[in-house]
Image (cartoon, rainbow, N blue to C red; front, side, top):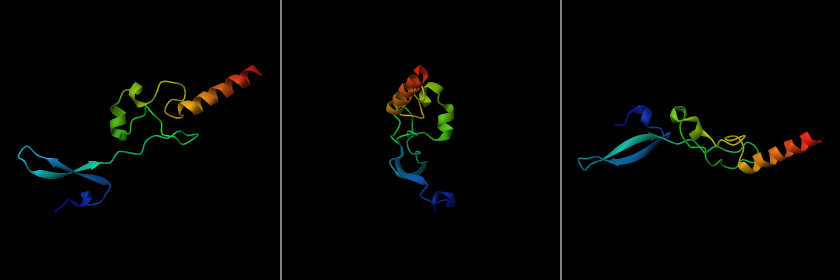
Length: 91
């Protein structure tokens, strides 16, 4: 019988083959949804889909791009924002 906490579908069921030749049912945590741009809602490239526990152990350079607004805005939206800021400073 499956343990009570494992009965819900929050955990992903994975059939894993053991060295003895049998297949066992393993329960894995699902990956979170991909990071989205706060302006346009597009998926952010360069930001991994990891659990907070795994993200904590990643180095800072692997968590998000190193450009300005990296991890918050996609490159298109960041470029537009930086151009608007530069124009407003000149006036």
